[in-house]
Length: 77
Image (cartoon, rainbow, N blue to C red; front, side):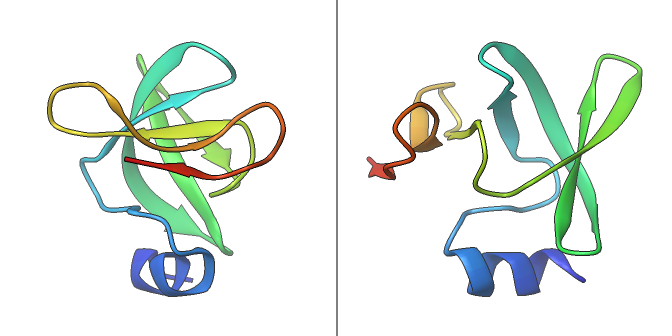
């Protein structure tokens, strides 16, 4: 499924090239999608990540735009 599908389905700003923080600290970049999951490059490796599980979408300044960490509540800037 495409990133467009993921944006519509989950209401997240998932776009190719978007920076995200995953697993409580690693910064990565969205490089694509597969089966409803986003593909995130962290260093030289690419990992599948659920669009709303333990992930923070970052804005251009590196600040948190949307967070799905901890209590599961969504925080929007």
